[in-house]
Image (cartoon, rainbow, N blue to C red):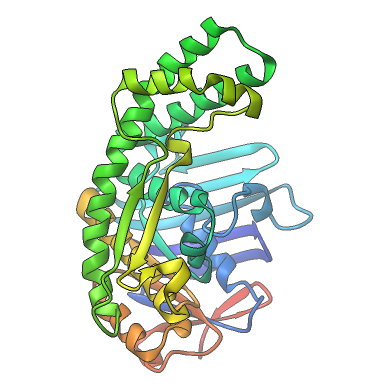
Length: 357
């Protein structure tokens, strides 16, 4: 897929903007804090109605306003030329596709794949397990509706079990919820184990293009509990019920899973250099893009938020080698790239956007 234009109103520091994005490569240039990342953030919403910079949708609305609106014109491999509209604010969220209301996120997620690359991706490596789960869950949910539904139902069930744990629910009530969430827990674990192996294979291939030498990247799934069947997970929840009651929450299950990224020298968070960490995060995002392409049959759009300027020359060259040339790329930076003549350049200042020249 590819973007043709974006119309944006009351988003972050952008009062109003309308951009032509038909070029294969578009580059937004300007000083820091002018709105370049905000525009990429708006484009990134189309995959799962989630920001790649914050968990709060309320933070996206311009100060003093009650809502924001974004209208996208997209060329889509299966839908053709399509118009997507997203509105969000104090009154709730509204999504329309060619004028038709989209009421269920599961019917929308993954239909418009974009892959954001930003400095914040380092948190996948350096941050808490929740950061890595979020990355894996978005990747899998975008390509597998069964996984998305299982994950959503599992989290709902765990939230209800936690409520019962805190209020002192009866053994019968807890058993009923445990029997309900166990099948979803097993399904989530099985899909994670299988799909993370696919992601791992892509990561190894991509990182080989980016790294300066053979550094042996690995991605391992670290489940909170051994993968088993429904009965064994129900039994585990029952055995841990007393401890969970004391803690007021469910301590074991897929919501506590982790994923380990490492190189041949050891854990990437502990032993990799800054350049190796950045290269690994870029490789992880390109691997995600390849999964989207393979599983959805759609070419994702790459959103590179000032990340190319942070790579050393070798890894920057490796990025272009690993990134398919037929993907649309929209990038930002404080300075023009060396091959500026091959980009459609947009100058950004104080939330305003205008074509260069």
